[in-house]
Length: 196
Image (cartoon, rainbow, N blue to C red; front, top):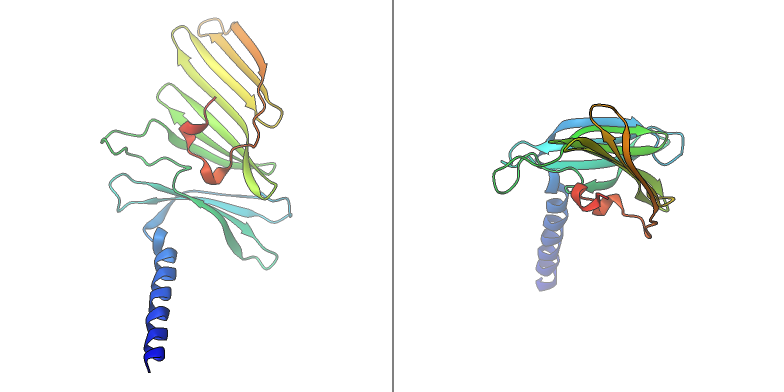
């Protein structure tokens, strides 16, 4: 009898743990972005969603990446609450970067964030069993010029360019090679941690 009670107690605890894990993202019920495209080169259309938790005062976001199988069902392969910043910060201000565009093109997942005086984009490709950061681009307004950065993390080629506001003339251009290994992964990604 004691063994039976112990079994039911362990079963109840295990069920609660599993269910609480499943309900972890239950409040993220409002979709703000939904894009489709083949991410893992299997010819099937995969899905990427960004959902917001409207019950939380900071309006945090949840990124969900789902691969489609041959039966037409979707399996979640990655979820993150860090990849897309919340609308509001803990000190009451608005986040410095707002996700403006999410797209899948040629198997690459691109996040474009709007800044107060510019924007930046991060490009991820599914390779070696992970979504790895392969590209970074940014445009920022400075006094008298726009600074553009185009960084191919796969090759290490990086171009920093300053362009005059009024004339569109390139004032300065620097090309460098800076290869990163291993490449940053989407599951660890937070936008401001990966600016170059």
